Length: 454
Image 1 (tube, helix red, strand yellow):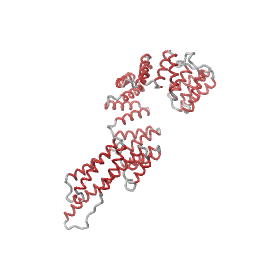
Image 2 (tube, one colour):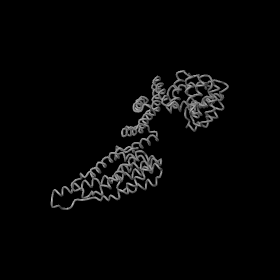
Image 3 (cartoon, helix red, strand yellow):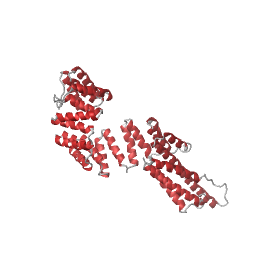
Image 4 (tube, helix red, strand yellow):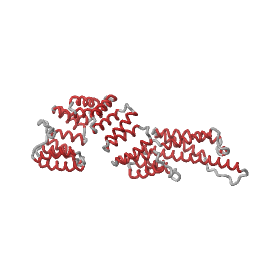
């Protein structure tokens, strides 16, 4: 992350030091800023600028070494506060002295702020290196003078976040944001915390602030698009991805994600165009191949879907998502032997809930009697029920498996729970309607086979 305010502060300091080095100091400032001190100031300024650059580029080891070097140079400056003499024979001379003292003390204040900043950045670097004890120790060196600087609570917040103590991190980061609303670190980690808590609206609020602070960072635009998708705002996400593509026309992920949004918006031709663009940029981009295959399948071009899925599997043969999609496409084509071979491969390669559930659903609902195996499907699904926290989709598959094995009472009870849980999970109405149709079948002691509710 980058502190915009840090860069501004560095710029102001550079001007101040150049002002000194250019020998255009206030008339009496040279009393306090000798040529020797000017050299020391220039040297410390170079180190500080290097420190900011290392931090911006997330070179944590360099941040730590440069922070130590800057601390040593700061101590050598010995910028003790200066005060005006109690009297002066000449009023003009007194005014010149006062202006010089004011200039010196202003410079002293800037250097102190830089010192506090250097310690805060070092603490953040240590947090990223997971040396939390050292991070806390370095903050203690400025705890008496640094609490009013935003970098200190920001550093404490980052340390807490890295230690996964999100409840402790949040108030520190909010305090830092209150001290300095232009600082990136607090808003970025407040976004991350809200995201981990599943508070997507709050996460977007902070992410939008982060993107406004660093409009040049395309990864924040990508994060905004993805978060808008999570919030179900496909139209807004489409606009965000379009803005990103305007900035970076070679971003295959942006094209793919926009295509996915366009499917949700019913813009199938535009979605095809986006997936084509993504694949032309990266011919082995499995996500785009998977999405385009789903579109081919939805529009009835099953051979084209198989071709895309084969291309994806050629580069990532263990991708269960591609295998699931190909299994389903082969099943749609009536090639149940090939579909079953993919199913066995899925079970061999993946233990994920979604992959196993799809494989078991195929076993339970295949219209081919030689493939359908309700008993095996039940055995696969029972361990998933609790793993999935009794997700309605898993319950729906289990009910179909019970029906396929002739256990209709269990099928009815399980499907009734699937309907109830589906309402709680806010599944779309068309999905709940399918659940209810299957329930009616089981009540009549009839199994469900793929294609019966099409």
